[in-house]
Image (cartoon, rainbow, N blue to C red; front, side):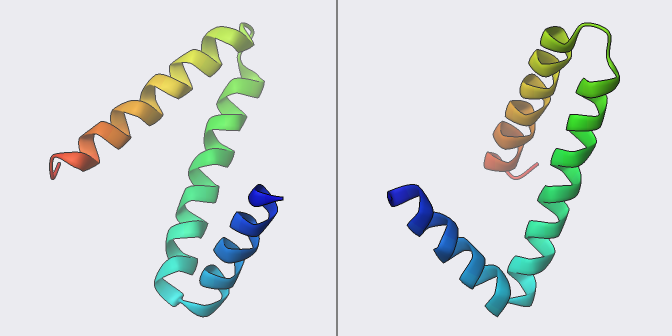
Amino acid sequence: MLFSRLLRLAAQRIAYSPQARTAALKAAREVAGEARLIARDKDKARAAGRSLRRALARLQGEGDGS
């Protein structure tokens, strides 16, 4: 129930704000790109781990102004 409310709130904000739409589109494209890399790799578990490490590195990089 809580998850559906969070999704509804996110959808409303994305629909209302052009900045949120741009950010959501960028995030969706990045996720699709990572999923494509995982799908093409022979060792899917290793590819998923590398994808997760890249995502965590990006999140940590954003925190210090990089």
